[in-house]
Length: 522
Image 1 (tube, rainbow, N blue to C red):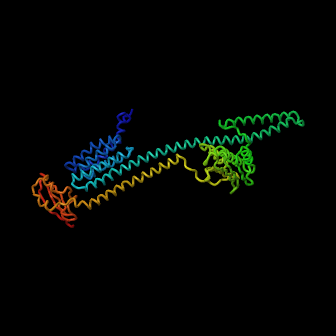
Image 2: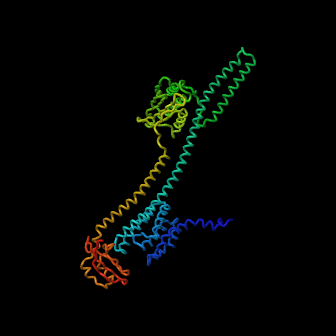
Image 3: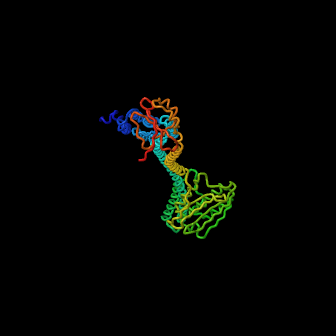
């Protein structure tokens, strides 16, 4: 056993992807932690153990792994965007989209973060502007990677389902087609048995005549007898072989294979059907190629059988004509006592077999209900070997094909949603921020009498009761920065004014400066 194949080495190889992910996510935090101080430094340093826990949890609890980095990000910045955690939020957002099978828990989580950021920005920052930045960060750095991961998961699921459905559909269709083709070819073999049996019977009959011909000597009569016996044996063997090919529910053909369509129609009339035959000259069975003649006979036979079975009492019209070097046969019936819409046999296996027979003859078949409520079977057959008929209308898609088409439409719809959802949310953030920009100046106005009443050295907690709840997000342009140990807030003198009140507090949270600052043009 080599060292790399030992159990501990195999465990190490299994943990290598998680270790690599942890190192990659900790890289940004390692680059900036030394340049920070105070709470921001401690919150960034917490990324090393915290992201390790997230890597361990991202498979079993993807939302927990995504939620853990959000708390220290908010400690560092109210707008949620931090150098140390931005890569981790995008990575765990993408992994949550891949791992979660349902979108609703993630949507509730994103909504909770967005809703919780508003009071946090209002209470801690005394302004709503960081909340808009938080929404943009949440949208672009978390939600968008989540949508990408979810699209990847859905695409993989749909592709896997589609392949499974296609394989199943192909197997089922192939099995049905093979079974139907074998059945139809067995019927063709039965037709050939009738033809060959008839020819062999004629051979045996002539051999029997030669066997008793007094003009032949004994040797020739014996040879004729052997020929007669051989023809009879061949006939029996042919009957046995064709009997093996026939299915259990198929009886031996009782009608000669070279029966004409006119004779077939006469037998149908004799059985009580109302049948009208319109046949052009040169379309009789004897004037057509063997395969075409058999297929023509079979089309009329199958259509008459279906009409008798599913539309009893219906009038049937058989039309046979020539056009463009092809034989066109159409059998249509009106609605019988079974009611309108009577169609082929259950499952359409008779028509499937009929289609195989016509296809082997080089033709094409179509069948379907008529506007009058009846049913029509139509076929085009070549009058010469190798002729290629015109293609009929494309058949209706099967249930499996419709399901595959639905899966493709669903995938395209989800792709459009993945693109449209971030754009719509971004537009909503822009509209909300624009509305807030218009109405917020009136919320940050400090009344003149309240400003005058402020006294230097007053405690900040006592001063806060005289100040507006919201402050300006930034001082006027050109305002010099306060000393390092001071904290300054700014309030509007009046809506739309270039001036602002500046209130600065020292380390002891007492008012150390109050002044009016104006925007300076650069």
